[in-house]
Image (cartoon, rainbow, N blue to C red; front, side, top):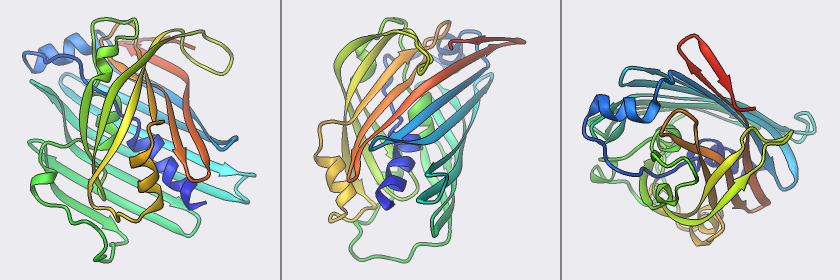
Length: 289
């Protein structure tokens, strides 16, 4: 189930990524216009792979002025953990500057099968300044090396996923799909190129937590460094044209967040689909369920 673990770490953390429409004029202007009166957003995603429901991924985002803090957690298993069991947490902190979110810290901790990892990165001015990983990875001569310049002007997967897309048009604005996102996940440096594909009208039902319009983006995965060129999973993702991210507008904000992710893997198609969104404004909480 190595391919399943690879899908989970990418789909639940890294490939949940999207684009930014427009450029704000200042720190407060960006935060206030994008967030409206929201100060806490909670989203839950159901994760499926090759026809199996693996579990849920829950993300909570807290806003305080121009600062943000995110925390995600998930547990994924097949046959109650007899075949496959993976659990992890991820977090990101940062602030909004004049051009969008700027991460300060990112972490990812997981356990799955016989593997576990504790990863932490820090940023300064949009550049990665420190990486700590337990256990440490052994140098591999087959891995394309990462340069210092490639770690400048990048986002961590969490920030790229949930805080980088905005538009004043709530009806599935295709402009949020017209972007290139530079991402570093602590191991690999890659770009995600988003292009508009179509607009879909969603109907709320028992298994999904949203009704309205979604902008469906085609996502092209472009590996740059920190990976082995002969890695079968990387080769599949870089060659396929079937990765999709469905972005939806959160009412009362200018934020667009992932509603659905579609990702082909070596063992079948993977999907992460929202089952609920909750927006807290002050002491009031609104559910989109």
